[in-house]
Image (cartoon, rainbow, N blue to C red; front, top):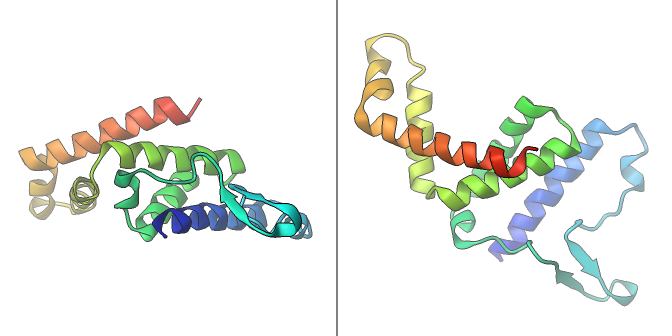
Length: 149
């Protein structure tokens, strides 16, 4: 069931991106089926294709976190189909290298580190903060190498 929801998220993100980026009427001409499915005779059955089943690490990430990462990445890299594919790939790499709990720690340190003054200094300078953020940065660097030409 989790693999199916992952496929649906990618398909929904692709449909949203196409609806926002393509001229009116163009999106309606697109297939109503997710791109990672093969349709049998007369649409009788669907078979998942290679790569549509996530590994255990990716499956641990909630859907909203996956979508948030991909949408944030697309905002930074352009709202194009290419950016969608690269950002989805980037998320897959980060999720395969970083446990979800560690991702949450790093994200929290980054977010709280933006607080100005003494209140945010602990989140910017502690050894735990530096370690967690460093792990996230290394995973993102690996994702950049693998996914962005």
